[in-house]
Image (cartoon, rainbow, N blue to C red; front, side):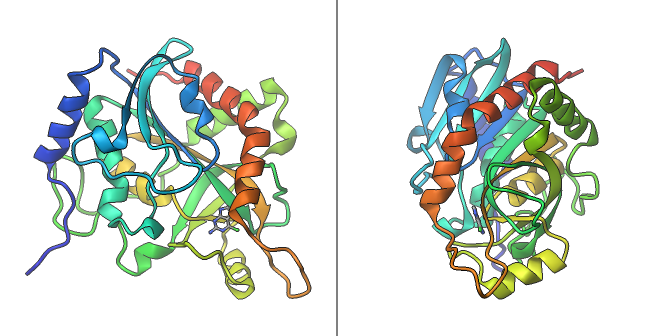
Length: 287
Ligand code: 6GU
């Protein structure tokens, strides 16, 4: 049969080795910047940056608000690699292509992945500008066969049937809360369940109501596929959503979701998010 498959282990190794040959940075932390949150990558010192289009096997970003660079450097002295711009199902990439960078992270030596995204709030307790630490996800595209691990399994990456009940590391979530308290951010730090949809259209009112009743607190178009692949190959994961708008839940509302609002809210909270993540980075221990 014709089998769905992403890049082979050898192809992934080829990309990772190509990158490692061009920088002395040996990152143990990998960061993925969401829409409007690419400023985090600009904080890296002694940067060695690659445009996605120049990296063998890498897809390219097509979305406004996503730069399309892989940046190596140090964040508060810690070696990091940062994706400034990510890939989404709605751009037309296969689910394997979207998550390919996670396997590159792994082969570069990354042990902990930090992902950020912009999301719509479904739970009324989430206000615009709130930061939601993701404690779990609902992967709707996965139910339609868009799970990044569909296809032959390579045991060098991980198990055929990986566990996902511990996907979002408890210690890292606690660390984020502690750091948020120290920085005086506790008023806008929340925790909840993130639901991913394929996009690019935003949800209908009925869909928002359905998702909330199913247990989702926020909805977006990314992150969960990357988390699945990162966990499959044994990296620790921390993820957060910046709530950039409230999903429309009632038929009397005149509100309309739009991408400009998403980018605008990102700008307003970006600095605090950068401080939160960079402080966390200094406290993450690797053995
Ligand atoms: Cl309301 N929906 C989705 N799917 N993604 C978003 C969003 C909403 N707001 C920001 N990203």
